[in-house]
Image (tube, rainbow over all chains, first blue to last red; front, side, top):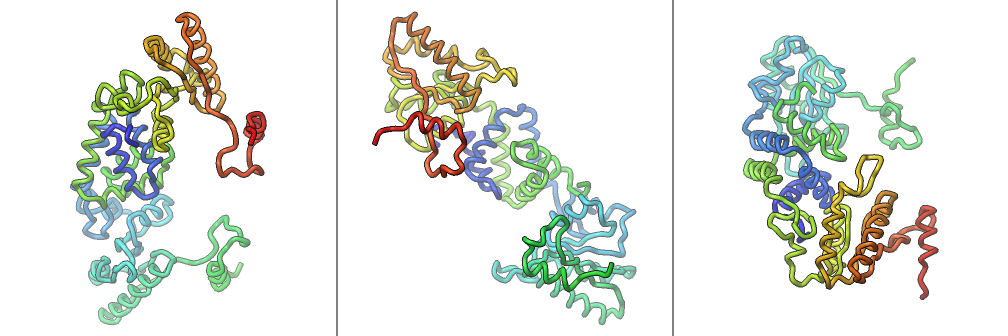
Length: 206
Length: 206
């Protein structure tokens, strides 16, 4: 690639560091940048350089925000008596895109993952417990970590800590977990064994 | 996506304009930017904003460059008697990556495509003819436009113009086209009819 000008090469090399982007794609994207209006590139550059200084974590739920409280926590119409615990901000966005949930969130920013040296102390679990202690009207905590081994372990760990808290504070609220089962549109023929097992166990009466 | 902070949303929206990147991928990439060191982001932003002012077309072959002559044209070891004509700079890069060619290039920056209102006048064909007129040592022009309808039409158009030029200048040089055939590693079972036909027609004696 000796014939790529340095300015283009630098951009291509940066893009190659992004997940899912290889050398060929990075080159194609860098060339596409060249065709965009100068004005748009300048604005994109400004946004990129300000990104980290502008964004911070919501002091309530640890979602990303530019002000103290994120758009969910500052929305008075949201139901504060239900908190959904998610691993990442992207998970929160999935719920928000569907517009299927009216409660609030708590973002852990990770999951317990011993193989990658992530323990419960690295997650924002203490913040959740503190929040729960303070909020007397709480009715339910929905543990919406991913349905994999680490997400499961994280959910179990938090459930245990919440049960201890309930006993200590002499309060009561539900702790629930997302349902397991066949995804909508799935084909039984290609479903994996564990999903089928869960779908059988959790079958509902019609 | 109301809960995405504005600074992140702007970056995501920009990335969504790039080829092959949808909303979900754009969001994931924008989040990835957040995790990169501030220093790297600042440098990337600088490169992006300088990109268009720094790059220009090589005055000889129209490849991208930051100086007057591109890295190929300024390389004294390249064989200037052979010119390969390609549609885009990315095509040139494919040849350069393989290190399979020692001649020079001419980049058309497009192909004749009436459906998208691109005519022969929109391509850098006159520059090629002028270059050929001036260069008395020229031995061969390899037409390496893509093997599709537009690329084919472009190659035929340029061949005709070059033949006229040969007659007018009373000079001789070869005009060739890339070979058609089965790609290496291909499976005959899945090869398309046109490729098979060409592979049969152009078969070689062993």
